[in-house]
Length: 396
Image 1 (cartoon, rainbow, N blue to C red):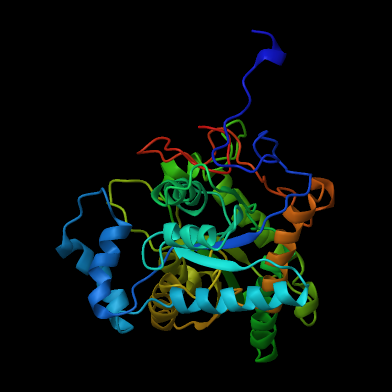
Image 2 (image 1 turned 135 degrees about the vertical axis):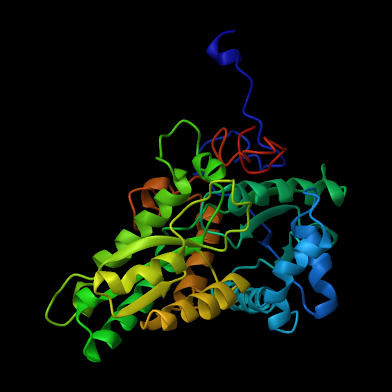
């Protein structure tokens, strides 16, 4: 077969501009609606176990084991903060979109709880929208934070019976977009400055950038398969790149100079002890800090868009308790949430696709960006399940 006879890349349910499989779509696309896609969470005690069954669907985990995780939610009345946060983000996006005189309604749907993604896609189509742009509330490369959302898009379109009625592209991963990074920069600078102003030397402050741990096998398959990322794959590389950028701008916040030590740590591990997961664990690192001469710790929830349960429980509860037991002063910096820079940055990403902004003109704060509009072959394979049909990427 000659090169000009090669089949076109298979990009499921893509707009014509994205269907070519180009890494970056650099031509305008007339998207007529935005779909905000998220994880979802329970909104009452009766929802907790059904929600956790959805999250662990297909793994055969009995309810008694799910109850071990359920106590995190039950501590907060059975209500995950994520749905309220998504309602607030949706409202903020709508306000910013209107401020820019764009005519694009925002629909919201979840992977694991109502409102479900297929319901959002069906509502958009019923309202006459056919060219959808999906914004997932996850910034980094991994199966659950990228490819699974792309699988969710395919499932949603097919569940709604809209295979021939709509197209759906996905906004690029935004881990190093200035709008996402700015709130973390501000938070770290404010936290370090507060400790220094209170008499803690810069070298006695540790900054820990925390993100969700994932199985090492999944981490190694995050990102395109034709790039050598190292043991933690693109997932770890992206977090490290953003953390370096944040720390590189810290100098002006430290009176009299001085170096503030930092590292990337992981949290919320949920797998069996025999399965290797990304390390080190945030609590183990905090417990060891006094032996390094550290008096205060700044925990930065770098892997999270907003104050998810993993932030409120694993960091604000467990990590804070570990710090107290170690005799350390503790502060946790804010997540982006509805920070004006973050909201504006997300709408910038929407406009980037509306206008077909060339990749060379797209903002990013690390050498890894700008990330792809159309995922590359093999990107973020599930190490256990293999490939399922996924939108916004070249198959598989």
